[in-house]
Amino acid sequence: MKTCSLCRRTVSLRKSHIIPEFFFKPLYDEVHRFQWLSTDTAYKDRYEQKGLREKLLCDTCEATISKYETYVSRLFNGDQRISSKREGKLIFLSRIDYKTFKLFLLSILWRAGVSQLLLFRQVSLGPHEEQLRNMLSQGDPGPFDLYPCVVDCVLHDEIPQFGLIVEPSFTRFEGHRCYRFLFGGFAWAFFVSSHGLPPAVKQRVLTEDGDLVIALRMLEELKYLDSFFRKVIEVS
Image 1: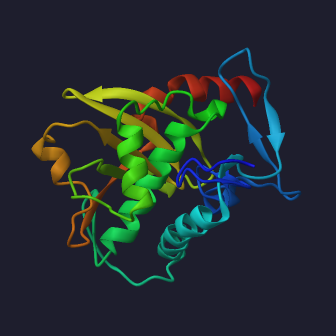
Image 2: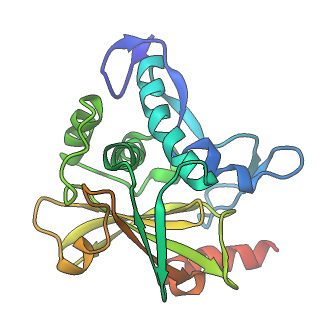
């Protein structure tokens, strides 16, 4: 019996994913393994049988977050109807369920912040951790400019990079704390701050009306991944 990180009840805990399991599926080989590569020499490269998990949530909280994940999984599979339009390197999405999608995003950011797994060591939310926990426990997505996320579709040779998950990293953008994730063929940049967003960021994040603008970016443009690619070259 341990304390659930979300509801704070002392109960039996589930092994919870930080990044949802469906994002790991493109990584699995024929025996359901994926390869973990580390640029830190203190940690050995290895194979894992299932998406990274830890005992974090109770059954009730796990079921609540699973509802958000199911909705987003249906979006990725094309089973959930939304509208889309491409103009050059921008894709304009509309008719997204703002509350469900935003809570999905907040759940990943918060889980990464409370996780003890090596992969999420750079995500340190400080006082924002408790505010995010309260928002999730109350099912409150907050306004569009509170903990927003900029989403880019990551391509290599015009192909989305679904089979790549990279350790989240911390950076600053115009005075804002920003955590960069890469999974599911997308780069996700979470803005964690208490002051107003730059206009360029406001134009790119999910709105309460269900609109989201996604940019197409080449994998080679993500310079913060250079050390990771050097490691891949070394072991290939």
